[in-house]
Length: 529
Image (tube, rainbow, N blue to C red; front, side):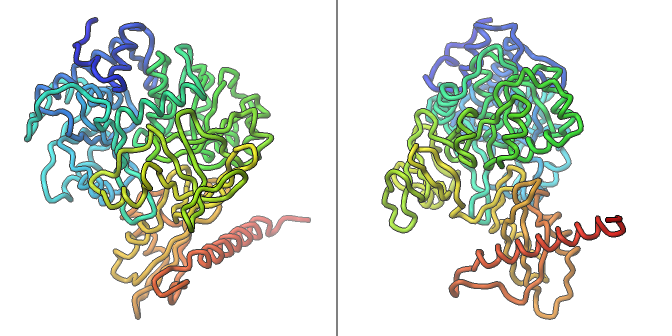
């Protein structure tokens, strides 16, 4: 098959990866989607045809197309079609409530929304909440790939350029509203080049992709690199430990990425000890630092875990710790990837610290994002010249290995998902009987961290925990809903304007520990000594 010459423009454009690979390895399997396989020639042919349809319909560089879809071949086709046409791909989370999804659609301002049938009800409710009507199409060969809705504002056709936006991924920072992180083709090129040098894949690899594709890691931590080198990507739509273990054995998976919660649940599944995982050579961990026992459990099966650290604004890979170094550096997240520069900075003075030091981690390099979508002020707050301020406090030892000490920002991580307390607090105070709220993260043995909400009821209000949690579930994705609600008369303040979150964290830990002790006592009642 021959491809249009325009798809070969742009030294760092991602769409050409698929075209180049299809030319070299047309019959190799690119995607295994629940047992339905697609070879590289077919995948590239579908993506190129959809890209051509989008161009003819007037879409092009400067446009954004949003999606609401689970992991699927159709979703991958849409991604590469957008990449080939120079359109920014905005995958939105199907875990959100209609209110949250509507807010992100409003912020993304897409020219077209592509929806998978399974999530049509959610997307429909979110779209109806907007003050304008957005064009909508259904993913798939018989839908958008057959007929593309004409653009309302046609764009002139031009080749894709390296600095065109490729991905816009919404992430929860320390502020009340998630922000759209804009990653260009060049950002993603350099991110994957660094990954290829540090943790390489080959055309013989079989990569299990179980992270949802509204996360940057679902593209830039193995899958895109796999499609660059001609490997096979096994797509999984949801995380079910028994199913994942079955896939590892049956598909002879060689590489995968997950968050600590997922690896812990796999290790606790009844099929863990009997599953043939001998094919697995590279298991990458991200989203949070894994506990030592988890590393030991997987190493005991002959599969050491490789710890990584990153953030969406860095596309996301920043640090990694090779599995063979983990025993010497327990709890560490490693050293920088190639092409990534880091510095440790005093949080008070913003002066760089040398050698063995503790301070805020700053990152610089060609994979650092182009900015937040439509929010120059937030971009300016996050950047210091060319340096990205991560908001994470790290310690660097004498060997240059780093570990996370704390987060300067207030976010906590539950099951690998970032949760911004400000966003949860805003949602809680939408309830007419809640005067104020504060949320903090506390350690959790399964999810890493869970939220505890401190709620100040309105004067004279009769408010129950069940009512607060029901309100939270209506307005927040499940992973953001607090695990516990505590009613208080007032929130503690460090100063008139600043909430004393450290005091709330201490109180939250005591509450959770008390809950666990009570549960343990109930479990042992009536048991003979």
